[in-house]
Image 1: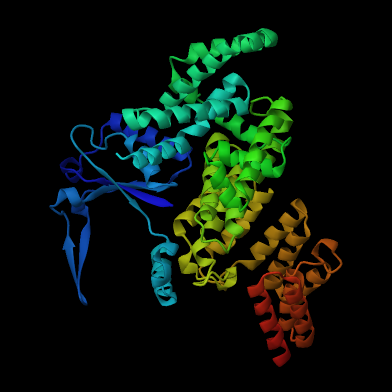
Image 2: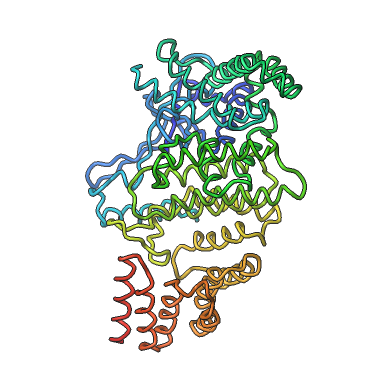
Length: 142
Length: 421
């Protein structure tokens, strides 16, 4: 099964402060451990929300809201995609990660990724088809 | 934390730490079976103590220290035995005592040779294939006997016995705990890759079970493959195998219809292919090819899988390239099944007549005599050439050869369609 471990944004990350060399080294070492154990599928850091945008949906209406966004604690600053056999394993791994923001408090949230079989019967062939078309567009790298 | 939570945490820690733990111990005690028992003892101690004390900050080091104290105790208790065995035992005891102060160093020797030695030992040719698979899952995957039994749909005592016997065989054959060198390396690596791919296929081939252990086997094989790629980064075929598994696994969600019926590659909804795994697979393939693997079996199979993965539609498939890859594969890994696949690829690339010629050349192949795909492919090609009554006969023959009910229905439908044409 797959998990996404999301690093919550902080005031520092939103201000665009780059991690120190020490933290970068520690983070690289931690990522190496994940790779060596064969469990890391992907991992990325995100730019502050000021260089992002939101699309808001209301019925058929679409409104675009440019960043930055204020509710810092609900923003994401980076993530890992991990292939593991249980939530507990994800927790144990993340306990070993360096504090993503050296001084002060920060949080990593772990969530399980849905897989097709999780939807069971509610995932009708039609829904599958639609989702598939979406995926095809999303996944197209060109 | 409740007791159940603690147990689940210990289970997770075990999965993460046990391979390095067993590997580190095996280097010192020079016996994989003994090392595993020591590690298991440490696990039992953890199960007793952690619910009270909480999970230690560095659980891997805790387990290692506990296992080593246990080893020293045992050696002292068997002092009599030691006198007989002489120097080797004393040397082992010295090493144990010296290393007690530094459990981390034991878990992490810099080049990862211990872990690699453990993989090579678990996949040693002195063991039967089944034993290699069971031992690998147990020692490298941290799976319990009951999990392995569930995954392979065999009774638990069978697996337990397999593992006990395997450990005994290794001990009796005095298989050294080491990474093979020189000429031996290639042969031994082939055995390791075979075991990993067997584990993958066991999970992948199952279309029936909704049992979570089956996909878990695929994931475990992929994880092992990635671990190997890290430990032996210069071995082209390791990357080739990783590429093959990642690309095949990318199709998991598309391979089955809503009622569990298998969906063939050509009819799969490519939108359901996992792009993350495809990208990872293509990257691994590139590494394999850069290391000179282009003509080696796993890399070739990965390259064929990659041709499909790159094609946005069936029509966009680069069949001439697939046909050329099969030509090489048939030379490097001659087998009737590869030859049949090669015929299909040539039919797609150069027309049904060309394909039929290659299929016909296989008709007397004894290994394919009862293989339903031979008449099924032949029927398909004959149909495309407008030779419908011959096609019908082939589909009927194929239907009589398959044991899969759903497949039989499909083949009989095709036979009926041929007579109508």
